[in-house]
Figure 1: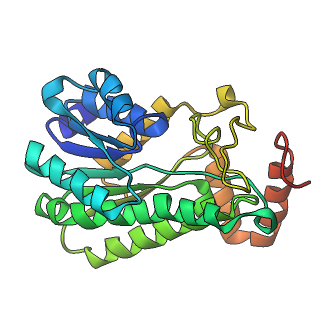
Figure 2: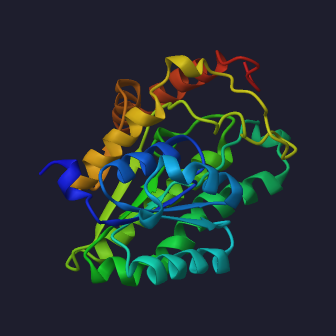
Length: 273
C-alpha cells in the first residue's frame, strides 16, 4: 500500500510543527491527503505556514505548550471537535541542550523533561481514547541519544530515554488493542533544534556546532517517518552512524563510551575536550 493511499483522510496531530522535522512531516502528510493538525507555541507562525501544509479545510492550527497539561488536552479537544477523531499522534515537540552537568542550572533539565518527556505523556494521555477507537498510532520522536547517551546533553538524553521507556511500556499494555506505537529515532538531522539548544544557564545557544548542510534533511527524515507509519513499525532508527551507534552500545558499551567522547569532543566550542 502506497503512502498516498494509506494517509488519505487520516487525522494526524503533529506537535512542534513550526519547523524542522515537525513541519516537514506535516507538509508531507498534507500532500498525501491527510487532515493535519499543527501544534506549537507560536500560533502566528503556524497560521503563516498552514497554506504550505494543506488546504484550509484539511488543516487546523492550535497554539499549544505541550508541557502544560491543560494545553495538551485543549489540543486534542480542538482536533476532535474539528475532525471527529484522531488516527495518528506525532509527539515531535522538543528541546535540546549543550553543557556539562557540573556547570548546569537544574532548571535546564526540568525544562527539557517538561517539554520532551511530559509533553509526550500529556498529549498521548488525552489522545489515547481516540487512537484506540480507530486502532491508530502514536509516535515519539526521540534520538539516537535515547539509545546511547551523548555527553554534554544529560537532560536531552535522559528525556529521550524516558520517552522510549514510556512508549515501549504503552505498546505492551495495548498489545491486543490494535494500537500502533512507534519509537522514531533520527540521527543528526538538519533543523533549528541545535540553534535553540539551552546552555548551562538556560539561555539559547544561538548557533549550531555542526555543519547542517551535511546532515540528513528534515524532508528526507519525514519520508522515513511516513514509511514507518505505513508499515506500522514499532521502531525506526535512521542513518548509518545512528544504527551503528545503537548496535555498538548494546554489544560494546565501554568502547562506545570512548568513541562517543572523542566524537563529541571534536565539535566546535565543545564544552569538554
